[in-house]
Image (cartoon, helix red, strand yellow):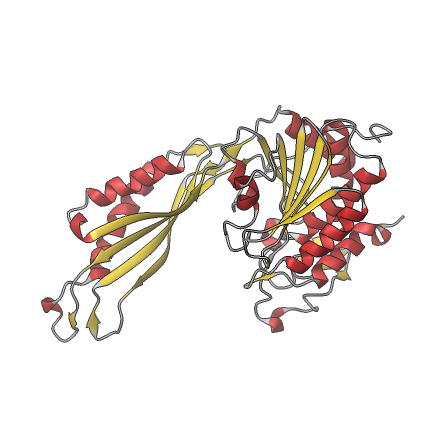
Length: 387
């Protein structure tokens, strides 16, 4: 069988053809597709939502007991963007030079297709010899929202001992992911006519003074916070204020993105920023508010999940597994405080996501299916043993 004949390509083609873009983030149709295949394969399947049927999440189980090996991939994608930039139909899987092009081909429908193929393959081989295997396909990821993987953890729909999150790692491993925290800073002033600015109190300038102090102070502190290639960072991502050019602004706000080493915690990181704000000479006119935050994770390289996945990668590719540096944040972050092994793995390169003409190499997609099957054989066992 050539790679073009591998059934995972048909699955990916089906997934790309089902719109699941954010906005609006509707994953009901793609969840129905996955649920139908999984029920037909013999899984116990639930489609769950937090009173928002359009944000549908699939949970499919087979086996029972420990260990619980959970696979996850998000089913939503970013929007198409400027259609003229696409050289192919973004909702049609198009094979060009052994690359599958289409919206979500890499992020994250390539991983979803590989995991769906794996689910059916596990069922064809009689299910796990021990423990439980669970597949979760979630919405609300591109929105960084609470109604996808976060919701499943919150209600106890999945309680993994080991979690494999489908992301674009070129079939290598990301075993450490930084936490993410968003903080809002606001400043208040007094409005006045721009023709007489001294009669007012410019909130934008006040906030600029705070941000200048905060950036300088945090830049010094974070410079030494490194573990290997991972770096603690702070970025001012949004700055808004004012109503009109000819009015002295009475209100301004910024939003800050803080990436935390797995050894740092959101609570401590927020207190650090808030302390700088409170120590500012203009603190009485300033406020600091935590918008959202999740801790990072770091899986040991000698843990059972990482060891098994690394061995499967070497078995399939003939080369030792490589451990990559994280950039973004995955749905694994919602389980970061649960004391479990979490690994990001999947076909495609991270730089390919969120852009026109997105693609996933077909060879990588097919290899991912073999690697994942080898992982399940090593962790849970399958009839017929290791291939």
